[in-house]
Amino acid sequence: MKGLDFAGRALLADLASTLLFLSLYELTHNIAVAVGAGIALALAQIGWKLARRCRIDALQWVSLFLVISSGAATLITRDPRFVMLKPTVIYLLVGLTMMRRGWMLRYMSERAMSFVPDLAYGFGYVWAGMMFFSAALNLVLALTLDLVAWGTLMSIWGAASKIGLFFLQYGIMRFVGHRRYLAGQSAMLTA
Figure 1: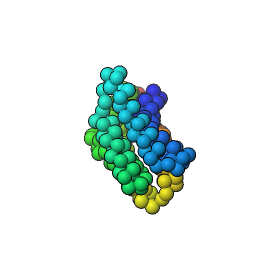
Figure 2: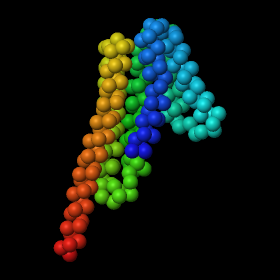
Figure 3: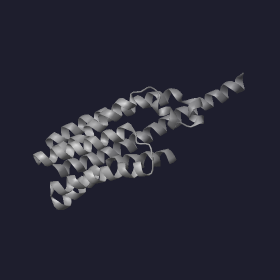
Figure 4: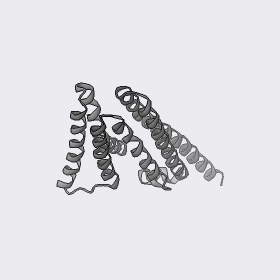
């Protein structure tokens, strides 16, 4: 559960500027205020990490660049779709990162690694596939829906898909791991 909490906080931090943008735009209907606040928050997050001498991952720098560039494009054109398209790029980058074989192994317990390491590799690719699907879904919704409808649907999809896949993976790995454990015990008794 500690890993899930850590991942959830990291995801929330990554989405904070977009969520602030959506909230302020919904409240004020002022695109300049919403974009300005989103950019300011993204800069403050990086500044806070730099001040604390924390390591800043490459994806966080990319996210900052995307926040500033999509925000600037939105301000220049007065079209919020540039901000709405930012998650597509993030999902693609995360999906590409998840295509690396074995990325999920660091999240696995020693016990799980002794019974279901093959599933950890497989689910790593399933997660990557979900990220690519999410990128495509965001692209379609950003180009066809208004800002509020897009924000609502992508927020629901983002949370539900990740929570759903997490519990599906956990259930399958636990079931298969238990079956393999019992099979190993049975083999020891018959030997």
